[in-house]
Image 1 (cartoon, one colour):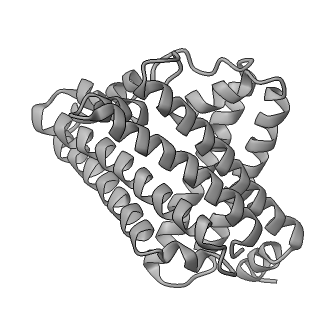
Image 2: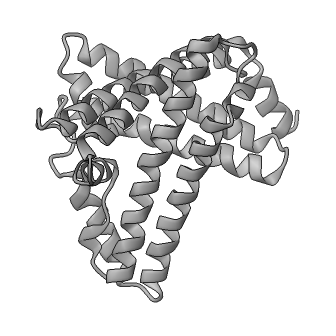
Length: 261
């Protein structure tokens, strides 16, 4: 049996498909937690950073935190592998690259979940902003480093724009086997647009870091949400974005049930 046939065989197994659905549900839990942390950032409550790692640490602090993190870890890992099989099985180049990128992201989330479990729920002690600034400084030190940082920022902005377009035009419905009902459509639209706005701000911060040669301006999701909060009417704008993350979490639960796998 060829490698391609072997991958197709594994991908078609019900257990593997159920694992991918578990991953979508895990993504729903993660986005609910990020939305909750973003609300706290908006209104000056809480001390945990509004990021994937911060959300995982928050979940670790719940009564079922240890068990929940292992479930998320398995779900993210299986969904990541499922996306990689999508990339391996062919199709249009753009679709394959998109699937490969998603696979890497979900596997990175699985690694992050393991990191929080391994450190007893505390995760990394460093802030997300200092982490981004650190590797941005390293990248800027390379030949054409500022251009590379700007390219990273432009790529993240493009991802954000894609999310906004996907939400606004409802094209995310193509990912589902059946129409989920009007309330889920509204949740999906708000979720995709809100995440797109957040990603766009992240990308903008990297472009600003490249333009000013200041790596400290490069921030992750938590820094982007704080930037939104500090804008005019920022508390209300960030509140809408936070509710968007919650809405995306709800949509992800529905996708876990009726999504195409």
